[in-house]
Image (cartoon, rainbow, N blue to C red; front, top):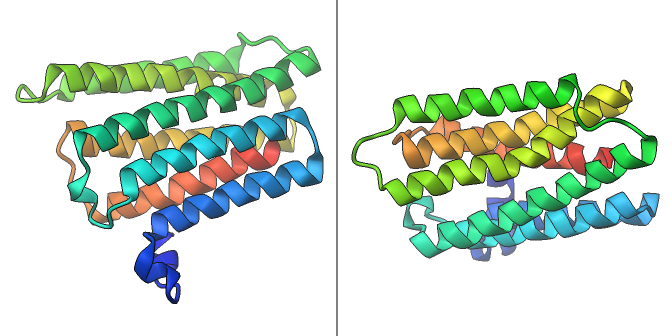
Amino acid sequence: MNRWFDRLPIIGSIIPGKIVLSFLMLLFAVFTQAFFKNFESSLCIVAMGFSFLGDVALNHKKDHSKQTKNDLIIGGIAFVLAHMFYCATYFQKIQAKGYQLWNFGACVALAILGFITVAMLITRSTTMNSNLYILGLAYLWLTGVNYTTIFSYAYSVKSIESLVALGGLMFLASDVIIGLEKFSGLKSGLARELVWWLYPIGQIIIIAIA
């Protein structure tokens, strides 16, 4: 999807399409809040703001292979904060509707996170930096708090808003692909392209339903 924005006249030649797309997602969050005028939408603006900062850190160079260790750390921290604010958004919705946080949906999310963790342990490369690997696991479980909350809300609400689980799953899938690239040496143009479909659509769904 980001390639569409790489082709924009003037802007596309100066700013990477990924950053342009991320900024448009931030504008979508702002417009959503202006329309619904609720606290949850305000939290989504902050969440998407951190996502945008993460995208700037990770994608300010058009050549993805030139990411530095500092880029990765700053981007990772920004995305953890984004997930925390999305988590706060849906926890607020759970509280407002009187739902229980721990339900079948939350259990499904934890099962998915557990499966991914086991897969990471099994496929770990012996040459991988241990500190980087530990950071990857920490990132998975910190962001997993958000996915658990989203899945919990989706299970409880039982309406069109349950589609937020799809948004969360798409966001998670994009992170899994990035994890495969960083930790398992995956090199695939198709996978990289898929990230930039799953990631924006997933967040748009999360923001729209908030």
